[in-house]
Length: 93
Image (cartoon, rainbow, N blue to C red; front, side, top):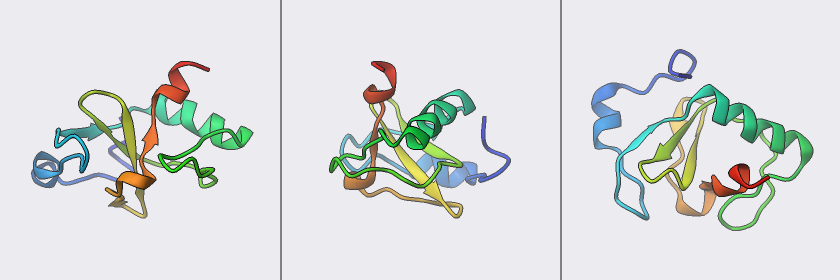
């Protein structure tokens, strides 16, 4: 896991929730981040508003359903639904 670079306090992680689903979040694993960053490098990764994601991801939080990732930028989780990255675009490429 990518917890070393941007560790989220376990107590905080237990109370963070997806603003859309209300489900728990977990740290994204390195393989998912690598796939997302590959797409960012290719210029094909989009967020929930269909805006191009152009900053590489160093960490992120994934919903329990595995449908979206919330980026962690500068060690701060970005829990804005419009900035979430739909994960299915990685799985079906």
